Length: 188
Image (cartoon, rainbow, N blue to C red; front, side):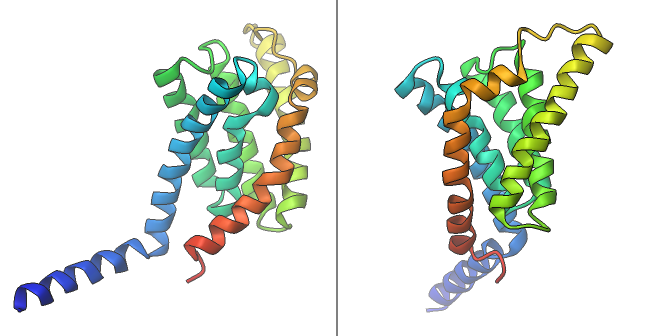
């Protein structure tokens, strides 16, 4: 009988630990990082090699984590998704990887900051606009000031080819973030 009581106490203690806000942040960040690797891979398998530039699937988990958990989590998701995706799948290409990393971190920081003051939709739109402006500045500086190769990356071209992804983000990110927030009960 005492074994059952001890087992229940241990189970209750584990549930108590896993239901803390800190545990939810850590587990959520790790899950979003994994999804940040898996979802782009699924898009590439289903749609083809152009799926990344068209649907921007790696952006999804970074943006959702920024709304749900904030800036730090989204930057971890951005970094781990880009680096481990490259190591596991070879995507993004090595030449594109640092630019993708910077782009996603910019979005994570901006959305994490904006979402503290505005609703998710306004924050997301502001992030998409200001993020692309800042990213254009990074590209300009890397090519013109530091002499690095831009590898043909163009912000305007990425916006044109990424319109389906931008629409997908606007339609899904705030809704999915709200569902996740309700599901994990972060405010408890």
